[in-house]
Length: 181
Image (cartoon, helix red, strand yellow):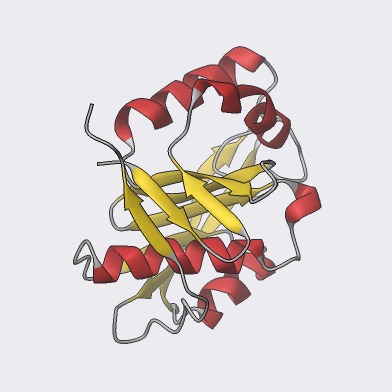
């Protein structure tokens, strides 16, 4: 059941229709989408469909919002046990990704009993790889030409983390389950 994770600087919450414009700003940014598994969104309708899918099916996938109410991205398990995340370019390099990814994985291990977290990272995405390695992920394999973005093939580096290797969640977080409807 969807709920909310609160960290020192962030609120990780379920998606809602009002997230359409800020998420379109992120998902239409070539910078933000440089290492995403799809091309940047061109039309708002692409983002609307993406957001509706997130709202309908992803109980452990969260919108990342700063405590002052600015939507800066998304983080979560789009399919257990694979973690994914994206932040607005203006929010990158400030530790938000570490704070958000760490809390989501810690909750999955402690509260949901998940036995591992995995990630598929473009080998050229050094910032994401460094983030994951700081959280205790380690490389388990790689593959070439795993997905086609426009006319360019992208490669994959596969990483894994277990509760035993996890080094994240140094900052406290709280979980609040959604109210029953």
